Length: 167
Image (cartoon, rainbow, N blue to C red; front, side, top):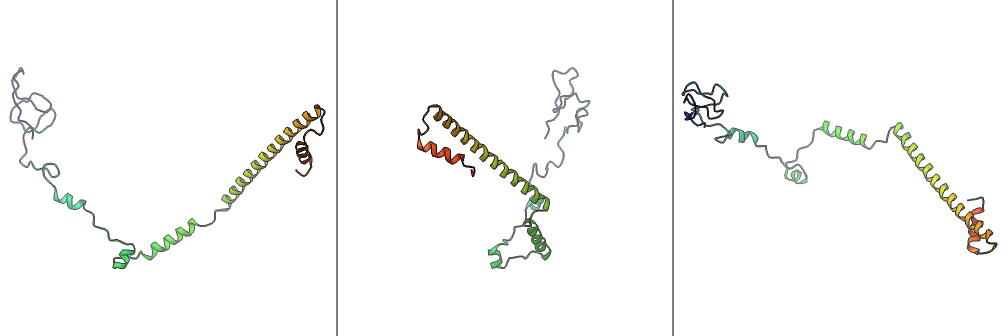
């Protein structure tokens, strides 16, 4: 494991040094370094499970039991396990809660959002109609300023159509 402490030729005292922290050791036969606490001699049982040898108990603990198939093939082969009745009832109640209609507060919010969308759509249609009327008004004023009241029958038909109060 650890190298034996060796005397250092460059040291003043010439005593052994710790191979881990290089501190001077008071004597050569110490088992641990007084400065860093590192082991200076090999222990008698150098085998450390999981580090220097395989730990068969850890391998056995890590194995998981194989799961049997529980699907259609498992049912056909006889390996099918039925779920407990309590779990089945719980699953049915959760399923019913999932597909239940929303609460009254949620319904009100959904209707409010739908109404806001319809209002926005109506405003957009009004703005579009006003824009078309403004364009037709410009075309009508341009035609009247030119002095030609019957310049284009298609434009006159559109103007008459837009001027009707039903639109």
